[in-house]
Image (cartoon, rainbow, N blue to C red):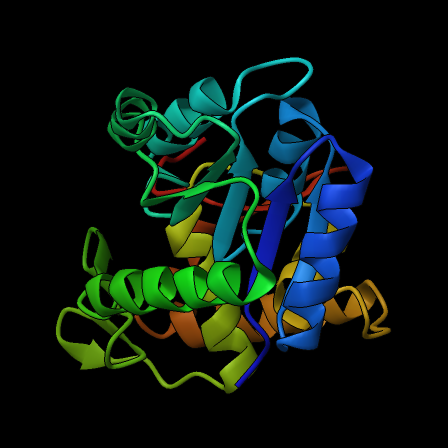
Length: 231
């Protein structure tokens, strides 16, 4: 099983480094953002499994960032833990009402943070197991890890399945080859960009037998997107 990716959105270097160190020691992969702008860029590049968001950020409040993540249909299911020095009950209620899945008051111990992360991931994982995504006759069953068209199973290799799953859960967005490489293989593995083209061709060939290859579209000069719309 691949490491879970945690995005840390925290502008204080000492706190961010402490959190990153604790997460890496516990087997998590870590991405860091100093503000909401960097956080949105990180989300566009690769979807994390969970986000830690500080309430006080230099450009936009953590509350507003949390609300925007939960409003976006592409990211609304991402679990979020809010980190803050605000300990009043009213502040906790406000944080949870913004869409945060949990709320952790500073100062906190790394052990408590890790325990909270595991608890939130368990809850969100249970909800995600039943997720079904459909576009016309094309259906993704994430629990069964199965792609079907009109009830017929589409045979796919592991990489083609992960690629199509990513496309179907991020529709109408253009992803560069670099972004797809990072999402499918991670930033620590060297894979040439043309590898993406090879797997896209294989994916389309498999889908062509069922008449749904049109969903995987090439955007000239940019990359690829999944769309049920016809240009």
